[in-house]
Length: 251
Image: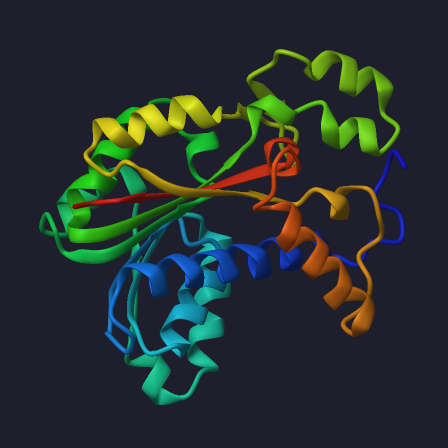
């Protein structure tokens, strides 16, 4: 399957957000007392899937986004929520590299940075800024493209030339055709240790859903999600997932 023919628009993105949300909930439950109202920073919040989910769960969420389309979409989504949820959401228009301009160090219990590092020329500087935002005991959640599995997606779709070109690469073309970065587990783990938020857990995200049409909501989709969730925490499958979800913890 060389194209996404027959795949509902946004279907794989929805699978990704559901998996990351479940994994993030697992780490939050493991790290913080049950019922604690957390201060969350979502850097590069996009359309706000995780930010809204956490606000609905009772947490105070600040999102940072610079893309006009993303800002418009997330503001519309927040406006449609009940007042109690809207009151827990704050949206800041800005660049994720400028967190120090907007916030004091140690201001947040949880910091999210999902799908951003691949677009940043100096990811180490961004990571250092994110680390400064973490309060003691805080959790940092990153989602990156898996450089050690770049050949998997084109290979599963029958794009043999693309698969062969991906072996050993550390960049890829995104949906807009822009060349962006992929990252390796060991390298990101070292970077997290360097900002005093060492890796505490990691997951693979999206493996089987790259090779099949994502089912409509219902038993078929739930079965796919169950298989993806199991693969995302099981060796060796998680190492060849399209994305890596890495969680670092501040002592």
